[in-house]
Image (cartoon, rainbow over all chains, first blue to last red):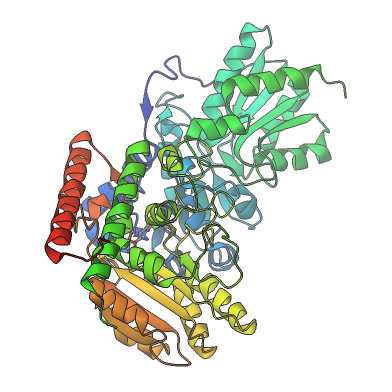
Length: 324
Length: 293
Ligand SMILES: Cc1ncc(C[n+]2csc(CCOP(=O)(O)OP(=O)(O)O)c2C)c(N)n1
């Protein structure tokens, strides 16, 4: 069965702030379900919670700067039937309260949605304390916890609504600067299912989140070199769409993964782990190697780690030349 | 010893230079965590220019006093002081915001001499500072350790773990300063998460506490002169301050926590600092300080 490719004919024409897309969808979810509450730790507005707060002030709870305790409060509220969405700066809701997420949400299987915003390198100038390039690795280890990383404003909206319907502990990362719109509003979206962004048969680029757009542009650059690159959007890092990945491995033979995350433990790592045991396939992993990132403009940091479209295209060409 | 007029003016000129440095860096990047940097400017100036034993030529000096900026987002005031002290060439200030700048949005000891800890995530500094105080005590060092925290930062539970352990271990070479400007990102700190009565809370954790006006030089000096407030106890200074102090258009306004500076605001800031300098020059002339500063 052939799947349609989802890249919009109008891709890259518009762009939108990820927290705006998230905040609007959260309001919509809150209107539909009165049990949804939102939790802030001194970053309500910056985390996109303002529309929800304005509509439902009594369901917006501010804790001040106490991320670890806030996760426990969320677990407690969930245990008595509320559905907390807790949003703040990504490292402070993932690495900082990791054990609370693991025990109080994961092990206790509580229906809490943790949203890390300004994730990846997007808080670029603020340095390594504010970068979040280890969150997939951390969160992937927690049994039963969803890990989402949507790659455009349309899919952020859909992911937020899907999270509201899903019952169980979840983590979603979103970025900070405006993201190009890649999809049409009628995009089918399902947790655990990848999105075929564009067809191709020489190689598959698997992108996620804020650098999905770079992978798409890289594929367009490869076109001009006569290389046909398939692009898959893995917005659901866990559970992983194994069928789609397996199919791509079979049909294109080589996989390039593109993520704003340490190579240790991220999406590429998850894909290599899966493929090595099912259908050993050469995988080129693009991401951040074993060092702390620097500070400065966002694109500058992406460039230092080979995550800009031209660099992804160049790495892919090199990779395709390699004999295995 | 009461603070002489001459010394007070000298310190005020230094604090003004720090504020000028902060503005210089914001101009380079167009943005920066200005509000909480300026509320702490007077205390930081007094610490660096009157109390801390430091050698900018030898930043690794074993018995130097340590300053741990727990509220790492206030880094502009730390950079301002280190630049003024000569830890690094002042031109580096113009690289704020650039790729690989030595002065990132939060301080990094890998990038700059004089930075004692890589802070930025709130609620780490007190434990690190207390650990330094403990280690220095074990080495019988005379050095003192200072840490500067925000009042919003106090909601991090890790601070209270550190607070209990510091008094338990009798770290009287440790001084924590809470820059109580009353604001955090979302608005007034006590409306976001109330930590009053702050003095009593710290005292109940075994600290010796004083509450001061964080912009009043004789008081700041007198307070720091009497450290440790009690032998065998860590000292806590609650400094009542004004966020964005020195930039009247921004004073006491939460919106200037992270300043995205407009041209008009930069103009106002320039004018405010020029007026402050003129005021100090006038005070200096009137005081007829012998031999100048
Ligand atoms: C662990 C952590 N959580 C959140 C933040 C984001 N943050 C940076 S500054 C700030 C507010 C700090 O307020 P306060 O301590 O009162 O500092 P001041 O007002 O003096 O700048 C917040 C929430 C952070 N840096 N670290």
